[in-house]
Each structure stands twice: as C-alpha cells, then as structure tokens.
Length: 60
Image 1: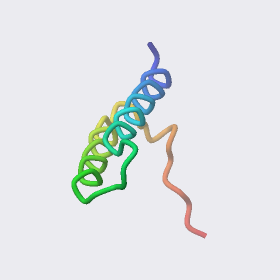
Image 2 (image 1 turned 30 degrees about the vertical axis):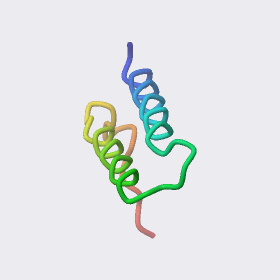
Image 3 (image 1 turned 90 degrees about the vertical axis):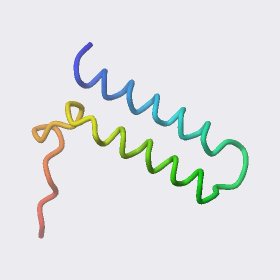
Image 4 (image 1 turned 180 degrees about the horizontal axis):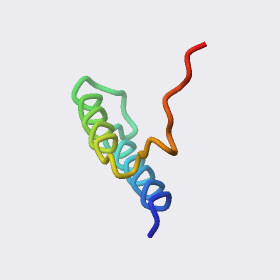
C-alpha cells in the first residue's frame, strides 16, 4: 500500500474512532480530550505527512 493510501486509511479510521468517541451525545471535556489524543496520534504518524506533499504555507 502506498503512502497516500495508508494516509487515507489512517484518516478514515481516525474519523470513525472520533465519531465513536463523540457518539450521539454532547461533547464533554473528557470526550474532547479523547478526540485530541486521537488527532495527536494521527498527526504523530510522521511517515504519512511528508514535507514534499504538505509544504508549509507561504506568508504573504
């Protein structure tokens, strides 16, 4: 599986997990903390986010 496909799968899995965390109820501090942890875990997978594909924004 190439990096783009791995990234897509990881993002899809994270979205499913986040939806499960939030559920049908209101967001709570605890659920938002869990969402933040899930997003940090995804962002921490540096192999999915190469600088060549995601260059920093240029300042104007």
